[in-house]
Length: 240
Image 1 (cartoon, helix red, strand yellow):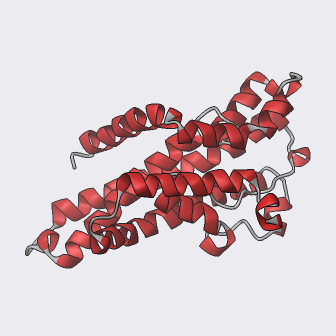
Image 2 (tube, helix red, strand yellow; image 1 turned 90 degrees about the vertical axis):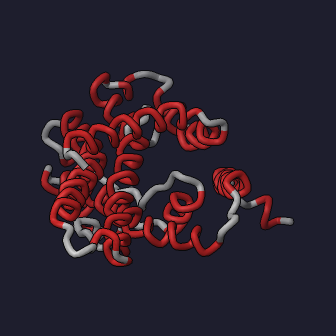
Image 3 (tube, helix red, strand yellow; image 1 turned 180 degrees about the vertical axis):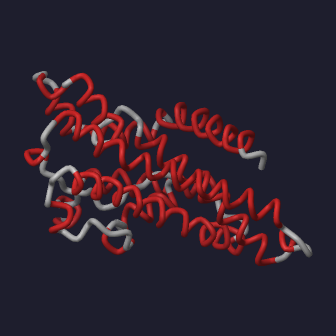
């Protein structure tokens, strides 16, 4: 019993969310389910890894030695992927990487530089989606001899489509104005929210607030329309 008393309440809520999502969706065809998630895996790993790399490289370039000293200025997924965050993204539809630790005391223009570091992660996700869309357009336009209808061609196009959609989801999700997401950090620097007495109390409860919003569908109200809109723009602009 002591094991359950010592469990992190946040972890319990995450586990409940994963179970709820799995029961809600169901798995009528295990082979198809496994195939789909294997095709999604490259996009998830790349998206999480480069998102955190974006934070690390920008903070490093702004004079903060912390990310480099901790081995975070790398695109190696091992340095960035949190196993629990990866599982949550696969099974529950949201996830996270290992947060990059930074020391804002090294920045010359603290609020501006903290905002740049926060923006860097979602910018990486946008660039991954954009590059993947350009590659997909090339593959589609250059497809010959039935390549697109072959097994390999189908796998390649599926992976590229997941690269686009999943990174758009990661970008939009991280822009939500809820701590500790990047969107809240960007707003914090723009409006200097840390000067208010309620700021730290809100920030400390941010993870719990976020889980509650996810549990009751609050995030879906924004994610769904925003992701569909941006994905639609990619398709129209790149004529896919």
